[in-house]
Each structure stands twice: as structure tokens, then as C-alpha cells.
Length: 390
Image (cartoon, rainbow, N blue to C red):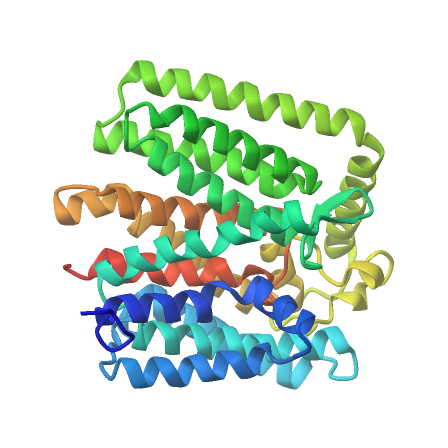
């Protein structure tokens, strides 16, 4: 019988809806604007939410009871109230950031309450996420675009594009270290193409995060799974290290002026935070980083999520976010997963590595706007996978 939407396994439909609603926010808006539906992304996401409710009437509220989910809910609720009472609503960026907090706070919990309720659906969603990213690379050969000297497609922010390529690299390395056959060479060539494309975006943060997380993932596979021989592990480290180092050295050598300018701006913004007298328990208000003046008037955020929260949401917001990160990375580490389940599977190693990847990215670039939505989505998905039995 020919498969239809109704005959597909429910987990397959739920996984695709989760990908559309949670993961495609980075480029869905640009695709819609290209076809003439400018600003329609939120409307589409609301429709996806409604479809999620129709497809899956089962709701799990376990994330609200888990300490990580509760801390995240408390953090975003506090951020929303902070933005409402202290945010400068006459400043477009601050107002847009306030609205995005509502989206991150509500949409992620709604999607994860309706969808991704079991491990099978979570694994399918990651596979579909990978499949949804591959067509993006095809646009490189059709309509390559450059923002200055930085490669991008569909008018995407080059940093966002580089982050998505980093996801594909980590997913490919996960496959490479799980299968030993003649296909390894093809995986290696694919990784080389992805790394070179990421290099052309001119985004150093995603490249560094990709390199470190590639090493972390392979180390996990070697230590916890034992599926990788020491010879293969050392050889992989050497090849990846040489390749990434060569690309980074070449990149920094031939774009040293741009790199130095970027580093200088970041240093000045960090210094302005600690030299200001605006630090307080409640912060200066969500989206009000420009109050610091100087370079903050041009960049709007310090390109580090912890520093951003510290100055905008104050000691209270910084404490909530810091405890959230520490609790997740310690109590949901692969070591804790093995203690709980007496084994560590490839899927959880991949989820934890991807969460680490987006966390490292948040230290180099992006803000509390939807630029770092992937970080919080993968934290919740990893927690759900960690605690469900199947």
C-alpha cells in the first residue's frame, strides 16, 4: 500500500514537525522572504505548532519537572519579565529580542511537550535535520553569495551558515567513527569539502567549535564505546588536527586584518562591561547592551552569551543560566548516562557533542535572540533522551 501521511509511523511525522519547528528557524525566514512571504516565518511556526497538536495528542510534562527544564523555564520567564519592565521598547533590537524570548520560552517547550517524547523520534529528528541541511549546500553551486569576502547562501548570516556546516561535519564524523569500510574515504572527502566551505564563510568561532567538538566526539567513542582502536583514534586526531590547523593558519594569515579588528572589538566590549557602573542584580534590561556606548552602539551584544546575560539580566539572570549549564553538563554527561543505563549509545554521545558544539559557539558569537536557539533546544532534547527509557 502506498505510504501517506496517515500511514507513516507517528514518530516519523512528529520528527519532521520538530525539525521544521525547532531546527529550521535559521533559514526558514529567508526562504519565505525570497518567495514573497516576508515576515511570515512566525505564522508558519504557529501552523506547525497546531499540526503538532493534531498529530500527537499525547503530552509529556516531564521537562517541567526536571531541574534543567525548570531552570530553563525560570531563566526565560525572568528574561521575559526583565525585557518587559526594563527593556527599551523604542529600540528595534531590544523589542525584537523581547519577542524572541517569548518564542524560545514557549515554542521549545510546546514542541518538546507534544513531540520528541521518545528516543526513536529524537533519533529520527536528528537524521531529518541532517537531511534538511544538505540541500543548503547545493545552493552553493546554484546561487553562491558573498557578504564582503564571506561565503553565504540565501542571504543567511555567514556565521549561521558556518554553524550549520559545523553540524554536518560533526554528524559526518559520527558516521565515520561508527562504520569501518571503503566508505571512510568518501566520508573523509565529504568532511574536507565541508571544512573548506566553512572556511570560506570567514567564521572563526564555528570553525574552532567544530574542531574541539570533533575531538570530543571521537574521544567519547574511544573511551566510552570502545569501538575505535587507539591507532584509528590517534590517526584521526592527527589528520583532523593537521587539516583544521592548516586551514586556520591559512585563514588567519590571509585575513589577519579582519581577524585583528574583530578581536579588538570583542576585547573593547568585554572591557566596557567590567569598567561600567551599570552592573546590578537585575541588569540594565534585556536588549539594552547599547547603553554601554562605544562599540556597543554598533554591535548590540558582546558575542558571548554569559557576558551578555551578566550585563543585561544582572546577577540573577547570570546565576540562573550558569547553574543551568553546570547542572546539565555535569549531571547529564556521558559518564552519568553510563552510570544510569550501564552503557553509552552513539545517539546520546552525538546529542551531547552537538549541545557542546552550540555552547562553544555561544562563547564566540551570537546572542540571546534566536541566534542561540539551537543551544537551548539541544539541551532539552538531550535531557529528554537521557531520562526516557526507550
